[in-house]
Length: 435
Image (cartoon, rainbow, N blue to C red):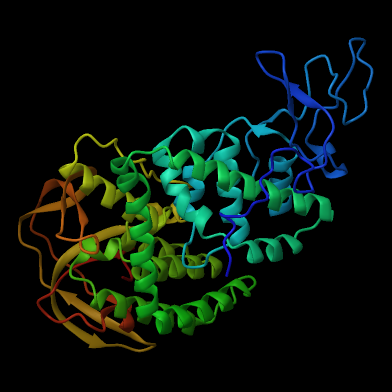
């Protein structure tokens, strides 16, 4: 299947590829007119400031003679909303003022590749100038650009509301922006390309192979997520929680250690699915418990963003001249914040596990002796591993003295402790009445 990348149709004038119907233009520093590529259809009137003459009277929407120049020359930062709205904000201007490419990259699900979201990411990055000036960001975005298939992009655009001209303008602008992105990355040195472009691509390729090995499990997860998505109110089937937890337990069994699990896509995806299901069922304590297990620093960012950051950080230990990779920070509020006050952490060695009613098990922990309890901080200590697949972050630890104490029994879902045996060290969340 053909890729967009090599197409001859590059949008130099707005009429070359169709769709971005013209009129007007902007003046550069030398006074020469640069042809406008902004689409100027009726859909754009919600975003333009209508041009006016020196007396303040309205000029035609397509006039380039406004006292402040063309009102479509540069739009503001994109305002989130339906795809149609975001796309109109892009194509109705020659450029945009700023971008949130990294935020889009951070929350992008590369397993469930969304063509329109990927195209918006590419367009926003190039239109703002970020992807033609910052090699690190351009390198990240290259994978999205080269994953866009023209046939699929055209098909996806047909599902948008609005005129065919708007849809054509969007497809044409995306094609042109991919060409601009490729032109910029072509200027990178081999060392820059290895770091900026090849490493992220390798992470994506490794993840694609990973997904193929978990195809059956992800198929089950998709069906469970679909049930949750079509649930209203608190009517989430109780069996859904057990089924998702079972998938996660199987994923945990394949992890070498807890640190590796935090960057494991299946562990992260099943944990997020559980949190969402509990929130949909209006069970904030249970949702908060799952978030504690996953780690709040991992909830709002995709594993691909983390894995690329880890691989580039590890690369810099061998190539210190490379720039620091784009920082992947936490994004979005804690969806379980309302339950935070109820949560207590309990650590201990499992003494026994016995079946209880209703699919629950009673876990008895040995009384805790005085000890030093340590937990990860947000500060990176080092990177451990011998390959891309095994590289992981080792965080610096924060330790406190824990006095001797008695541990009350915990009542937990049998699925959650199915593979835990007496003698195992566990960390549990509790509100004093259940685990």
